Length: 243
Image (cartoon, rainbow, N blue to C red; front, side):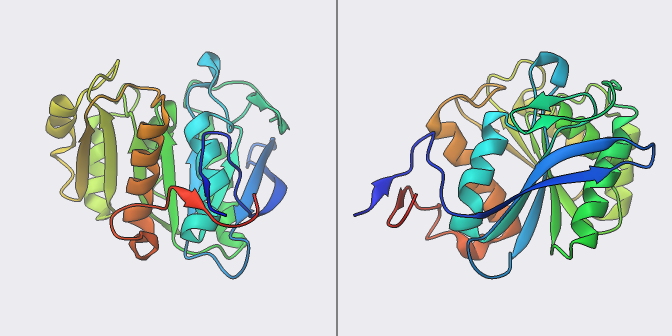
């Protein structure tokens, strides 16, 4: 019998703890979740919110992407803790680098995905993670980036210009009531990137609390990276199978 997909629902996937090493010698811990059968259609490399404010690989949107999208959308989901960040999976080596030395973490994660033969690599950054994506994510093998609640604090117009020059697409999901950057200003800031799509989300806040907003975010991610997986206009809200 079909069951409603709830906040804590974990759908089937092939889940593997992973560790990879940065060029400055740090070991970062994470998890790779693959579709339960067959090859993935695309890959999400997840960059979490600010670790000094509790951000980590288990931050709820990224965790739910890992719990649902391998089964619902045939996606590979790679989550990891940036340097000095701790979660249930463990603590990555090193100390918080304020978004600077984390460039090596982004490079290491993308390199891991490329060397693993994972297809169609997309960065999914949330808050601080969007800054890492914009500043350091223009790497070989990266198709584009999806930005959740981008504050555009550390990332500058020069970073946006680099994305524009690269020709790679950006999709920014901007909450109506965000604490840092709201849709109208976001559209102005991202206007310098021809392939940037800014989507304002009515009623949402920076942390995307509530299943309504989780579903909106996951649907938009899939619409960008594997639209063929959408049944009509949205992912299924029920699962008929093992949990």
